[in-house]
Structure formats: C-alpha cells, structure tokens
Length: 363
Image (tube, rainbow, N blue to C red; front, top):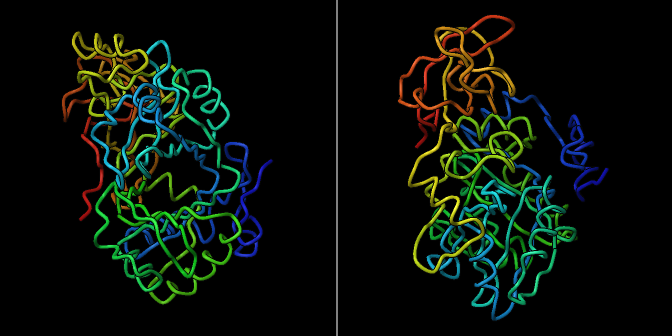
C-alpha cells in the first residue's frame, strides 16, 4: 500500500483511512456531508497526491500528445490546460486526463491514480515520435483547495494574481516562499478553487501553512468521500465508474473533447468518427430520483414496463438537493430530459427522471 507524504498528518487529524487506487487515503475527517458543505460554503483542502504526472518533452512532444489524446492540442497555448482522454485501439477510454502546456516543447499529463502504470505503459507503447517521457508521479504532491473562499485563502501566500488565472489555465511561480509551484484552476467540485503542484519535500509545510491561513475563513481538510459527492453534484465523470476501457467518449457524452479536425489523427479516430456520424445505442445520462432512495453503482435502470434499459455507474444522496442523484448508461429512446426511468433499489423500482448535469447550479 503506497502512502502520500501527508499520510501521518491525515492520521493526526483523525481521518478515516481507506485503500484507494493502491494508496492509503483519507476518505473523511469530520464527516462526508460536513466536508461537502464546507466546500460549497467556504473551502476544503484535498490531498490528491496519489494522482499521476507525466512530463512529455522535446521537439516531438506536441506530435505525441496530439496522437495519444482526443482533444485538439493545436488549440492549447502555453499556460493553458485541457481536459481530454486517451482512447484505446477499440475506441474505449484508457483514461481521462488533463494536459498542461508548460512550455514550448513541454507538456504535463495528469492521470488518474488507479491508472498510472497502465497509462505509462500505454504512453511508452505509443511513443512512435521519439518524445521524451518522464514519470514524476512519485516526487510530486498535489493539493486542491476548493470552494468560494479558496482564492481569499491562497492569495496572501503568492504574488501571482489568482484572479488572472481563468478556468483551465495555470501560472508557475512562488507560493508560500517555495519556487516553481504550479497553481492551476481546473477543479473537480464545481465550487471553484485552485490546485498546487509541489515537490514532495514541501508538501507538509504547504499543507500546514494553508490550514493555519484558512482556519478562520472556514477551511477544513476534506477526504475522498466528499470529493466524490461534490464531483457528482457537478456532473463530472469518474474513471472506473462512468468511464472505462469499454466506454467510448461519444457514449460518455465527451464528444466535445473528441475533436475531429484536420490534422488531429489520434488513436482510433476512425471508430469515434463513425460513432459521431452514425450515433450510438447507449449514452451516459444524469438522473434525479423522484422518490426516496439512494442509487448505487451497478443498480439496474428500467423502463415503466420493468425492462432493463441501463445501469447506474455513479450515485449518491446529494447533500445540497437532499435527493438521490446519479449517472448511468441508458439505452436510446430514454435520453430526453424529463424522460421517466426507474432505478431498481432493493427489489423496488424507484421513479426517477433524466436531467442534464450539473445537478446543482452554482455561481
């Protein structure tokens, strides 16, 4: 079981630790709902150092990233980040990721913790361009400060004007006296905030400094439990639940990051181009329960005659809505908003309706 460098701090804070993606990670401290509401109302800090980071260097870095990801890297200037996915040879998703354009011939791929080894092998196997690949996952810590007060908490610790970092952009500079910190604005909660990529040796200092700095403004440590309920309210997909090697980006509603422009000849383009043109038989859709119940991964989705028309991939009780919400792959014919579906919960078909995420509309 791997541990992030902040493992002992989490235990000192009374976190409940669980195995996750090969790491011992904090799932909650004060409670999932209280941490969730803290992020929605003030701020929460997540240790997401288990995520993977790969550097792609050299004159052929662009060609490699353009080939291995579905989004159009030509649209990605230095200083910006891009949500994307890596398709496999059948059009399924190896992983979803964020691509950072750090410098003219330098990119960083941020991948899911559970997929680090798989993604690294996939990148090496498909590096037909001679790009230099460096896995910096083991030396990099990643802290995410999320919530409406995140900027207020972080700003006194850096001369970088955080208001000048738009969504899916970043700056590299001094933070809390430490040089070369990447401060990005991508977020996975729907409540805004920033991520800090730092060398492991500075992680404990930065965590402690931020907790002290943000305490009076309502900053709390937050675990993976709240991270999951927050991302689901925001309608963000989770790899291993909503995305996997057998789901294509078109089925997953990620056509917007599948750029079929001239020159963007990524892996399996022909398969996804055909799906985009001809359509698919199932799509990832959001739903809200209209009766009491909590949808869970693997539950059947049915029509009003009891026919199975899909399966839940993510589900929870929304702390904001006080209703069961979820996402799942649903057969064609049930995709329109307000379509009536039923979730099979403990041998009972619970009524729900199709909605377009985000489930919670935030400022």
